[in-house]
Amino acid sequence: MDSSSALKTLRLLKQKEFASYIFTRFIVIFSLFLQSTVLGYLMYTITKDPLTLGFIGLAEVIPAFGFAFFAGYIVDKKEKRTMYMSCIFFYLINTILMIFITSIYFKSTYGLLKIEWMIYLVMFISGCIRAFLAPSSFSLLPLLVKREDISQAVTWSSTSWMLGSVLGPLFGGLLMAWVGVHTTIIVSFAGLFFAFFAMLRIQKKPITIQKEVGMLKGLAEGFRFVFRSQIILAVLSLDLFAVLFGGAEALLPVFSKEILQVGEVGYGWLRSAHGIGSLSLLFILAYIPLKTHVGYKLFASIAGFGLCILLFGLSVNFYFSFVVLFFAGLFDGVSVVIRHSILQLKTPEELKGRVSSINMMFISSSNELGAFESGLAARLLGTAPSVVFGGLMTLLVVLITFIKAPSLKKIKLD
Image (cartoon, rainbow, N blue to C red; front, side, top):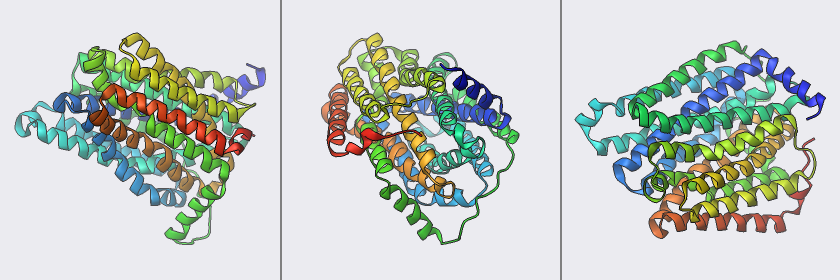
């Protein structure tokens, strides 16, 4: 680590608004992962059907994908801090609904079938909110730091996201075993409540003035920008298919209960393994930024991710499964930093909301589609074979992209 990188990192973290943003991002992601971990485990406990885990992802991705078409346009027109706080507020309302449906009263009054359908409902609502949260967060970040600090700010933003994605599932598993599902959801509500008030430390930001062209033309501008930029389009496409076929984590309730037989606590550790790996890498990259041979590192990292998913599908040992998921997260962390840095540095301010929404349609939605693909494949092929198939397909996608998109090898983060 050189002294200039260390000083830049310390200067960033001492900025009140940026520090508040990082703290809020961590708490929000922690709370949302806590919820998804608990609800996924509860769903499989009720149904014993891996396909229902895929339906959870589908329930979230349909509104997230549909609203993304105009969410970015709206965010570009609105004040970013207010939009971000509004998303947290609606998550709080949705969490109150989760608290109600996981209560003893609801179970005794309406039965398990109603709980299953209500889980789909709250995940659908969560997908609607997420369509606005992603572009709001993406657009707010560059307003808090100088342009020359964007790359490291993105790394710290990704680090806070990963930290939340690690601790959320881990605490979810521990709390489920300790105090039960209902109280764990209450904990997530408390986290979102604190996040809402942490955002008050950030001042409202000026809106970038732009010519009014109408919603349809505004959306078209965002899509034209992405599809005319070969690098951005190629990076998004590569990550989309890698995540789509590598969605093994959706089946972790099945692995933890039936294959590895490790219960709630083991499930929490497995759910966190990917994030622990990514977090470990991101802490390193916060001080030693990616500079050379970025394109080759991107290909190598996604290939490594696919290989780890393949090995996880073959594993029948908890510790080996944890290790390969850890390394899958390590490799995934590289592509996260590269993709987000390219989007921040190459996207004009007035298009950031729309481009972020398109990114969510490509990447974030592919997580849920990957969950559905994994659930469907598990129903047709069996749980372990479906994961092995996904790992092989990820490796195939990397090979095809490496041959067909040579420009990716020349990516630079400057």
